[in-house]
Amino acid sequence: MLTVVVTVLTALWVGFSALSVFRRAQWVVGPLAEYGVARRWWPWLGAAKAAGAAGLVVGLVVPVVGVAAGIGLMLYFTGAVITVLRARSYAHVPFPLLYLAPVVAVLAMGPIG
Image (cartoon, rainbow, N blue to C red; front, top):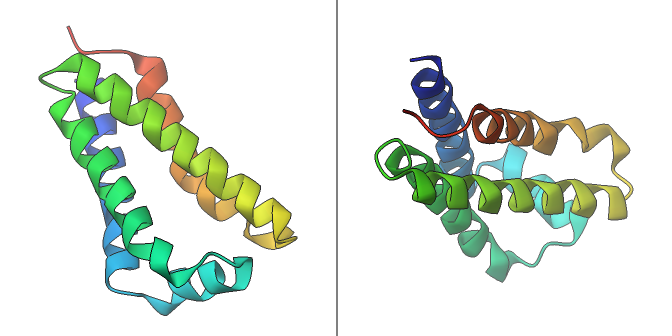
């Protein structure tokens, strides 16, 4: 049961992040521009997060999909940390980590059943 709760909450959290990119929330796209992420990439970044969030939920029924989505999100948010570090915005490093940590937790909990 705990795995289901953590997985669903993580999917909602990542989905919120995707929606924030799609809606061009200033608190999200402002830093992206500051880090030098090209505007043409923003929809793709949002789509990757949305697909990962959906994959986590599907993974509750089809575990291999959840594992693949979790690995993809882990790579995504690790890349986000690297992007922030390369931009020397050290104060912003915790933000992608707030998304990475629950994804890692979901993967560590393993499939249901």
